Length: 353
Ligand code: ZN
Ligand code: ZN
Image 1 (cartoon, rainbow, N blue to C red):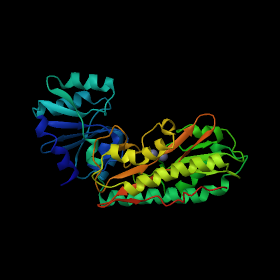
Image 2 (image 1 turned 30 degrees about the horizontal axis):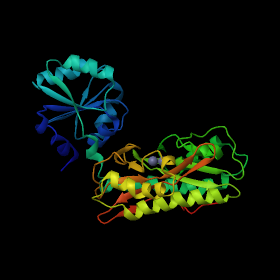
Image 3 (image 1 turned 60 degrees about the vertical axis):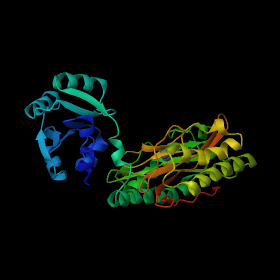
Image 4 (image 1 turned 180 degrees about the vertical axis):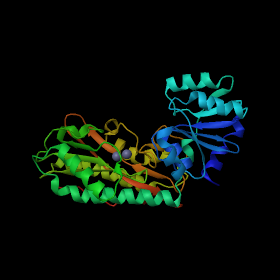
């Protein structure tokens, strides 16, 4: 089934005449259009790609399967007119796809047609096809090359920001369209910040440095975290690192289709909890990765969805001790029929640089 056909399966059960798709990832997934603005109206028989003047030519080139309709940048009245002409009574929208203001304006313009939130559209993207996987593999291998490249820059006296810049520049030169998210370089006590963006702090001997970074290739992301020690590692540092790596390996060994996101999270969390550091692992084990850097399914204590072959998720346990530092190790993996394939190949034994 095509992507649009799978989306259309959501129409009948909710008595929807059309779905209004506004999230960038969804637009790209359904149509191939990569512009940063626009919407897609999918009815039982049509796929209308609604774009303003800036994107008309690009949309026609990238989305030959759609009817491209030029609309004003404030498109609510134009959307309402399209809906009226087709006598559609009920239009669904992505429940995470609109601001409250956009919702207000659109629902008023569409009246008396009902404008109702629909969940589960993102879920269409969870299992990747061969072309998507090829892009994700390329993005992962660029991040691997980035880690190999950056090691010689990790020296006392270098600023976190210089490290991030060098890493991003390198990945661009390797063919990345851009970085997958703001690169995290967190050294010393800052390494206890799970999302410590690169700062002006200089690296110092004896510190942990956590790097969390990725590349985007044709819209698809990769996501990798490595923690290294500079100059030397104390017994305590070695112990915490070994704990995180053991937990990560336990998750990789156990990950397979049929597990819920919750069960997957437990694979690593039970190792960390048993060591007494449960409170220091305050985030989920992982998340789906694709056209969005963070998407479903989550590997989280709150995720009931079941893993399936073809999903790409991260496995990224961490232990963070405020005022001391932290360790995270993150790989990107592909669920296979019997387990998982680790797409990240950057080494992960504790490196002392
Ligand atoms: Zn990451
Ligand atoms: Zn991640």
